Image 1 (tube, rainbow, N blue to C red):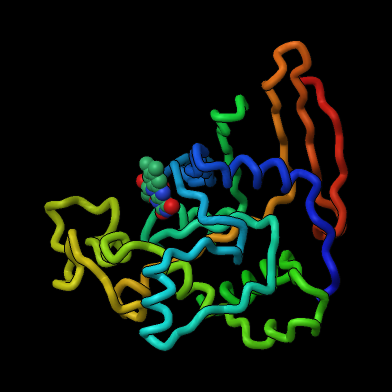
Image 2 (cartoon, rainbow, N blue to C red):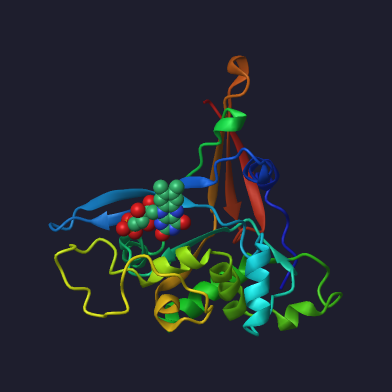
Length: 245
Ligand SMILES: Cc1cc2nc3c(=O)[nH]c(=O)nc-3n(C[C@H](O)[C@H](O)[C@H](O)COP(=O)(O)O)c2cc1C
């Protein structure tokens, strides 16, 4: 993996998102198609789960990962790619497939004023190119032990047993009058087993690889600034342009 430079917009966004008072949910917009085939936007609130694959693991998640013999990936990679967890049965996942994985995410940082197998393989390659080793290659040597599967286990472990249970809810968005078909799909379940087959079949980690980032800074009303960064050469470099707000 060649060394990747730090994205110039990463540091301020990271500072905002890791401050204790920060709202870490954001609006994620995908492209859907109406019954007549017209493209329509779809926006919803999702929770920011850190910059992939960095995870702020809860002590209970660490305990479960160890007790269930999954272990932890070494903390060897970092990136500016945004991680979100979701249920594969939700609309956004199909929309991502149909639109070529294009999304727009909007963060409102009030306190500061301001997408199987083949697809999975391709996704891992794209995400893999966005990863940066935190220590020079070979120096730590722990990257050889790092696995994609365990990384997904770690995101799953970091949800509470009740939240893990939601991945065994009846299919999201289907009428309550409709029988879910599978008696294992019901509301209010708690999942302790990190390898629970039903929940894990539905659990996904979405990774957003930014290509264009805009920052509107409203802190100083007399000098409102708007900056756009565009990734060039697969994100090896960021082009910076100052815009009228
Ligand atoms: C504060 C908040 C955080 C949410 N976080 C997530 C999330 O991380 N992942 C997710 O799939 N849905 C999350 N949701 C639910 C989504 O807004 C949405 O209802 C759900 O994902 C179904 O959307 P879809 O049918 O368009 O895929 C959250 C909702 C709220 C209000």
